Image (cartoon, rainbow, N blue to C red; front, side, top):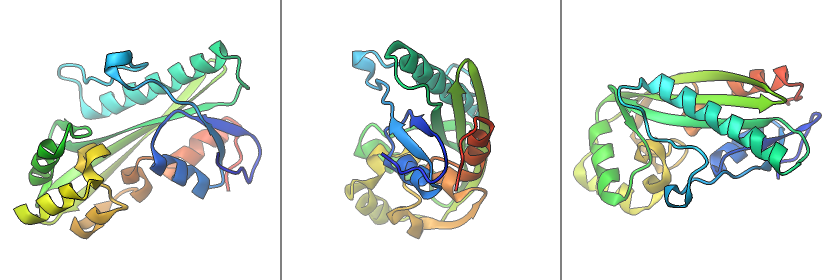
Length: 208
């Protein structure tokens, strides 16, 4: 997959094309290590929030579980022992964790809730290798402009929101809605590059 500028490679335990692009941006070589995500087929990691679970605790738990499950798969499949990187992103309005919408109706409801408000985007990154696991959390604030119903409907009908946490993509058409970001732009995309770089360096992965 991604071409390595420095030394060593990693596994990326994510289906997100944004995370692939961001890793390639900083010159990290990687192979995809896909975990099962379909609950009907038995997902490798249950991403259901626990009752009363705080959003930061939720993304931390899920990213750790994905990284550790990924490392287990590396051992079970006798793959080359590269570190496994996983991440989890949550869009948070108040204490509500907004995952990927189930369809257009829920996407429009999420966007209407975000309209004219400031919300948080939390992305936890975890790396697991050889029984060692480390993690970092990125927190950013995103301010949406007020959105008219026809605007929400047009954006939803574009299809862009349907596989995105919070029903929007900061690097896509939704950039037109965002008045201000405080924090990590790459973290809002789904992989905070500063925190990711710091983690990978502790595992001996050369970056840039």
